Image: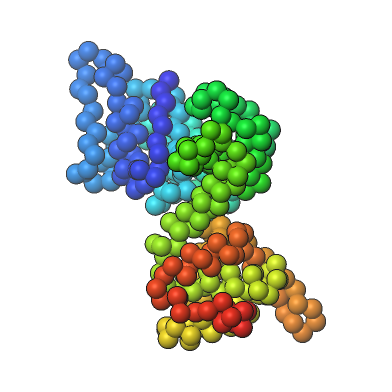
Length: 325
């Protein structure tokens, strides 16, 4: 029995996946003494030749488990169907089990119908860590700090922030470390609650800064419109039409091209996928119809501050944003 692990963020094309699986399973020990070893290159063959060589390698196993991490980053789901139907199609006699890991809950619902039929998924959902679990994890990392430098409220606060926002242990560790680094830079003898709170603010801003700095100006203007509406209108959910009105006033204020409502909706969809906003459909009552309504998932002031770092938006005053909202 063989097993292989593949990170689909690094091997995302069909050929890369097939080649990597073949290379990892292509152990010389699987061959008889007088048998030719199958060569599996990185590139240079037609796709069907890569598959043919993979099937030849798999024929040396009774069963293999293939783990595909970040499977939603695959550029095509055809490789899933090919692996799932390999025995049925008489490509190989090896029984193939696939463990596909994704953070996108709806990934398997959106697969090609034929792929879904062949793949026949059994889904296991793993809940995010809660505050108590994150505390347990952080307690195991206390030895990264000198004895006695952590105040009693640091780990519970890091755990509380992390559980409320994402439930991700790695992000919790980053906040834990950043709070310690901040205390160290300031020459403090203790890591305290204030260091955690300021580190949390810094990490949130850094995350949005990384996201927004690489986006087109139209995305920034859209982000600014929903940040302004959230900050100054005090509405939790804002319908698309109201957001578009605010967006138009922002683009006119800085003499920027205004995109149409259809492209504006596309940008809102991108923001939802990036978990910047949450979108739901609302019924406006008799004669009002149904509309998409959007809620910002993060601090609007943080987004406003980051967008304003772009020189194109610096001339927009706070009073103007209040008026646009």
